[in-house]
Amino acid sequence: MKRLADILEQRISAALQKVTGQAFAAMVRVAAEPKFGDYQANGVMAAAKQAKTNPRQLAEQVVAALDIQDICEKPEIAGPGFINLRLKDSFLAARLLEMNTDKDRLGVEKTDTPQTVVVDYSGPNIAKQMHVGHLRSTIIGDCIARMYDFEGHTVIRQNHIGDWGTQFGMLCALFDERFLQISDVTPTRKILGELEAFYIEAKKRFDSDEQFANTARFAVAGLHSGEGPWRTYWESIVRESERHYCEIYEKLSVTLKDKDIRGESFYADKLADVVQTLKQNGLAVESEGAICIFPEGFKNKEGEPLPVIIQKSDGAFLYATTDLAALQFRVQELHADTIIYVTDARQAQHFAMLFAVAKMAGWTDDTIELMHITFGTMLGEDGTPFKTRTGGTVKLKDLLDEAVQRAAAVVEAKNPDLPAEQKASIARAVGIGAVKYADYSNNRNSDYIFSFDKMLAMEGNTAPYMQYAYARIKSIERKAAGKDVDIEGELAGITTLTFTDEAEKDLAKLLIRYDQAIDAAVRECRPNYLTGYLYDLSQAFSRFYSACPVLQADARQRPLRLLLCDLTARTIRHGLSELLGIEVVEQM
Ligand code: ARG
Image 1 (cartoon, rainbow, N blue to C red):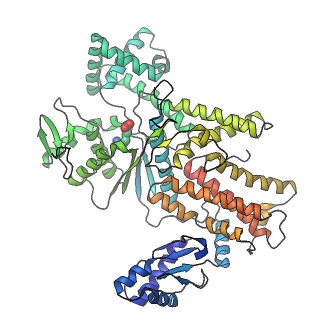
Image 2: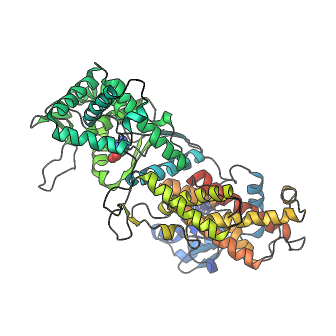
């Protein structure tokens, strides 16, 4: 079904056109206050100003020319020329019935302009454990990818892992040493042990042991040329790291898979060409021995042009060179219409300059959209960047394990009699869900304080609250089943719906706005628009449920009420599990 706000926008714009002979936006919004109705059109004032006529009069003419009685009661004009709209019960009912029959999409239409959208997210630097710094890119990026998918776009996930560079020389050197010490049948996992410790040891040896450092440099050369055992070692290290973080993706219900990994190493043999091309077309120039590009409009503090360095004087390529190659690949080989990069705000300048260079080089034009989606920092309870008690980086795995443990205590307190296995699976859903939801529900541009107590609270805009709201509706269904009520049968047979209470209408009006909430969230890549909507929805459900008996309702009222319960549950489930990747539970 078409989005309601779009229909209203079109109808009112058409009326404006008819009256003024010009095209104006109706500017339809959800009403600021329910007492004014459900939607309001704000465009008349601006139109009147341009057409040099009285806004109030214009509003009256527009209303007279408006064809909208299938959707709204008679429109009202307020203030200088606002048009207020109130939905008809019959329209609400028809929409609810449409949602009822659309099992998978709840009436949410696919886009009619599908695109190929590359979403670049997570991108950990491997040979290190994933730490909390990777959490935000991983989950925000995943929600963006899921939403674009759901809208009907072709989404290509790209995990731009840091799997190349000189630091791999020292890792390979240590690998070599251990490999020779142990035996060639020892599994890689054993050789590497704890990855983080392996990395720290390699670095320590590199800084203190001249012979080791030489081997490391030798290894880097071998990695480039392909000579010796180095590539094989490197592959083992990379494979092992991938295994490690794919485990975490699974824990987090993040949709990144092996096939989405296209790390820096993939572009290694394309970098010389990139530099060559940019030199040939005159964009790249030598400056103090390095090869640089100076995109227009970027200056340092002293007001001097700022370079994007693409090759150092020793011949080494940089992060930016790889990103240029990746961008070219995504446009030319993946045929991206849109590329979305999800990293923290500190990389804003890097991407702004990257996009500028791509444009200068003619690799992108106005038909290709490049977006850098940024986010703030996760803070500890003391308001400084999140760290362990001793000041170290927090491993993501430890953090998630702790969340699940703490959730287990909440479940135990609430429902001690459930079977142990069920309690454990609820704790997993609640613990992981709480960490993700807390992140999603914040404006991504803000820093936020990571607090287990807040995110696991049963009250407020939290995962457990939302999961509980869902489980509560499910318990109504179970109660019905216990009384031999066939809800599914009743829902399938519903043809007429009668509204008898304002709380029913309030809930219904929110339900039919799910498509709009998703659209707003996708357009700005803001998961908090979605969590905000879901929270409003469950609060509206609470008000409805305390005002309106459902199973005890009389035969005239019951179909609508059953349907409202079912649609609310389905919407919450869809939002949480399909779009946010947060599990719902049938019981809590
Ligand atoms: N590995 C990078 C980091 O940890 C993130 C990669 C982001 N993607 C990109 N195409 N640069 O900061």
